[in-house]
Amino acid sequence: MCVSESDCGAQASCVAGRCVAHGATPAVSTARRLLFEPVDVGWVRRGDGAVGDVATIGRGDGAVILLRFSIALAPEASVVEAYLLLERVPGIDADPVAMTLHATRIAGAWDSRSLSWARQPLTDEMGAPVTRVVPAAGRLVRLDVGTLVQRWRRRAADDFGLAVVTEGESPTGMPIALGPVDVPADRDDPVLAPHAASGIQDPRTVAPASVGDPRRQLAGPRLELYVK
Image 1: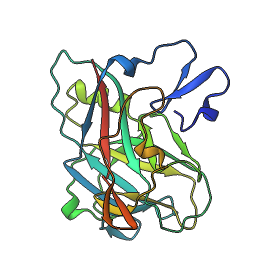
Image 2 (image 1 turned 120 degrees about the vertical axis):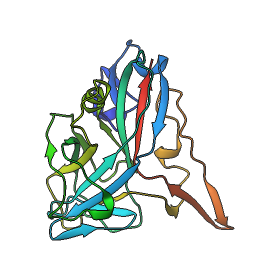
Image 3 (image 1 turned 90 degrees about the horizontal axis):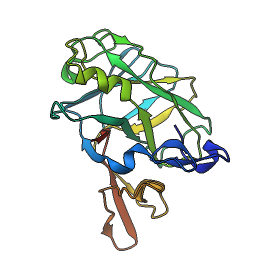
Image 4 (image 1 turned 90 degrees about the vertical axis):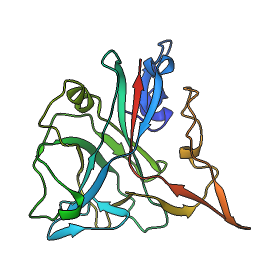
């Protein structure tokens, strides 16, 4: 996984969040890109359940983001790549500390309306790739969840979604948008630009709220599939 060209060294380029060797053809370039919003979203932290459209993870309180998706794909469809897209919320003070995130399998039934620290579902580590988020990175965080999505394709009956967990911690943690959140727009924000070398455009646009106060809306977590 990569955020910028410097993550890939001299022999590869960062294409749609993954290092691709020079001269190679990224699989996503010939695949159809699909975006799915979760059908249920929640998060918990030590001591209680958590509510609101912003989750703060990596603060040492065991905070976990829980997501469930409903995906209908034709049996013959092949999932080439699968990513969970998260957006960091700007304008909230955070320590300049790099953090590492990855996704795990949720192995128990859950409902965001009744979540609490004591009533959170079990999770199961599946060895999913990790993503290191440095302070200077853009707002978009992409987690590789290909292995987990392939389990869904095999109709695993004991899968109840994805959990986002962190490795390491900081006093302030990392704020992640769980639902629509209006923030000041930054036209240099890489989230709004095409994915490098892929020709894929982000479907969101910036709509000014008033003269001199452009705003954009964070969309919350989404599942990004590249399908053939």
